[in-house]
Length: 510
Ligand SMILES: Nc1ncnc2c1ncn2[C@@H]1O[C@H](COP(=O)(O)OP(=O)(O)OP(=O)(O)O)[C@@H](O)[C@H]1O
Ligand SMILES: [Mg+2]
Image (cartoon, rainbow, N blue to C red; front, side, top):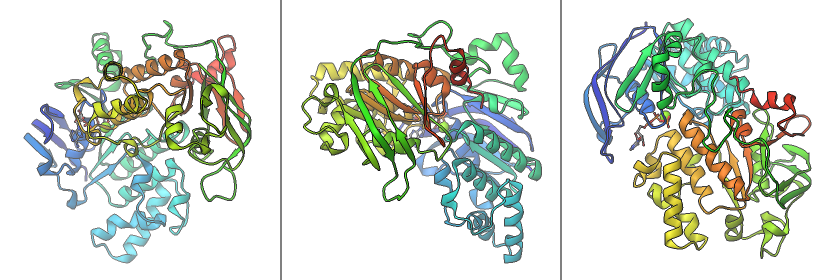
């Protein structure tokens, strides 16, 4: 049975913040309704989902008003609400997939035979035709999200809340995950509340769109109505909503929304020689035969399906993993005083000054206790004067919409805010080579454009950028050449005159 969700004057203020993360909010979602919740990064979307799932600890902040699920205060122990998060890895608990699906039912104390039968049924319903003892670690990101959904399916949920369930997976698998959500909804008739920045994936499949602004709901209605109402267009754009079939324009970029289509390339900074890459302790390489040279002012996008070795290649180019075979070599312009040619052989201080790296998971990277300190760290270590550092910090805070959060703790930021901070902290001291893994995930259209500008600025200053990304609009905006990893690694150049490659790069249909 599905449950309705109602909020009246509900607001939530985190203990260490002056402003409410969300609200006051008035909301009525009917039992069985499918709702897409939109809003800028930091608007409070995740906070609402956590409140509905009953996982906002009372002592961690202050609530006003009321939020009820099925007329009662949300309580995660009742097992009626399923929660799916962004990061596929964080949701897989057990080493065998069957145990993951069975976990929730075991907590409810169901009999063993029921659990066994339902586990098989739910795995199959989510398109995971695999034996229950199949290793969870062998699943792709999209399959892991479907496994999380199988666990929820098995519990016959009354409400399902999903926080950017497709943000970290490749576009082809994103469609499968969305369809899996729809399958669970069809089988259980549950109320569905999903947050996702990229609206196109969902608008044909939800009953209602709710747009969250700075002060509560700014628009709501059926998707067709919301996105065709000319009076709403400006409101939605101001909230950073990704309008269907419309790309935001970075300020430095061209009027057609494409930021940079040609650029003067400088000296070679980094090149590879017969490079193969592998994860530590793996006997077989993840990608082979990589012949690249990376010049000042050049952007290189590494693309390909999950598991194609993109992150491994990025880490190896960044000098953080040893080559499996062949070499990564820094040319004189990048070496500048470093004795050895291989970045992997450099002491960490030499490496950090020359090659900046942003990992896939932002939270692993924070070293200080405030946003401003995090941004200031790199310039300070690089020996910038206090005035120069301060100017750089202010520029980055402003450009990425983090000014109001300068004193906030990095770990207390929203998902999209954390991602922007991790990218900005790496950009701050202007390293010559920037290696970034999914730099744009979790961004609204405005913060996305801010990030694009930061990268264009770095390229103009003669840095080279290597970006692992599923976001083809981003790669196109920074004028990236593409290295497509797969069966056979290929280097594809995006050029203004080559319409074929433009189409490839411009295709960001989810
Ligand atoms: N644990 C926390 N402690 C303090 N403040 C927090 C915490 N979590 C989130 N916030 C703040 O609350 C506000 C809303 O955060 P929330 O995570 O709900 O935003 P969001 O809409 O989900 O953003 P995003 O799209 O970036 O994920 C933000 O200003 C954020 O910095
Ligand atoms: Mg969020």
